[in-house]
Image (cartoon, rainbow, N blue to C red; front, side, top):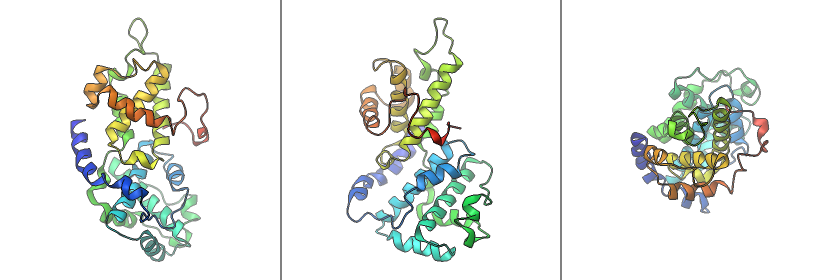
Length: 271
C-alpha cells in the first residue's frame, strides 16, 4: 500500500487540475461514443473485472492528458478514423477503448484480446486486419507510464485478502461463512463497477476510493460504527473520518448494496 500511495502521490500532483479541466468550457472529448464504458465492460467480460475498470482509467487518463496539453479531441479521433478506415469518430473512440483494453490485458499478463468477436467483424470491419498492438502504442505515446496507475478495484482485491476486512462478520467461533464472504465480495465488485463510470472518482487517489468502497459495503452489512476498524486504517493509511467523507459521496451515485437487484444487474456478476 505504501508503494501504491507513492505512485498515487506522483500522479495525483498532475491530476489535481482534472476536475477544473473537466468542468471547464474548454474540455474536449470530441465525438466520443456515449456508451464507451459499457463497450469496455462488454469487451472485457471474459477477464477479471479489474481489467475493464483499469481500461476505463487508461481512457480517462488519455482524455485528461489531451486536455491538459491543450489538444483537440476531434483532431485526434479524426486521425484515428482515417488511419484505420473507420466509419465515424465514435467508432474511432471505441477503437481506442479496444486498444486500451488490450494494453491493460498485456500489463496484467492475461491472454491477449482476440480480434475475432462481433465488435471486430462489425464496427471495425473496414479496419481488418486489425493490429491492436499499434493502437496500444498510440495510447502509450500519449500517456506514457501513467498507464501503470493502479485502479481502485486492484486495491479492493488486496483488501479482500486481509483479515481486517472481515472483522465483525465472523461467527462466535471466529469462522467466516463462505456465503458472507461471497456476499461482501459481490457487493464490493458491484460498487467498484458503478464508480468506474463516474468521472469524479477518477480525480481521487485510488486507495481512498477503494477504502470508501469497502466502508460503504461493510456499513451495509454491519453499522456505521463498525464499518471501519484500526486494522483497515493501518492497512490503507486513512482514518475513518476521511473514509466516511468519501463514502458519503458514493451514496449519491450508487444504490444501497443491500438491495437484492440493482438497475445494472443485467451486466452480470463480477468475475
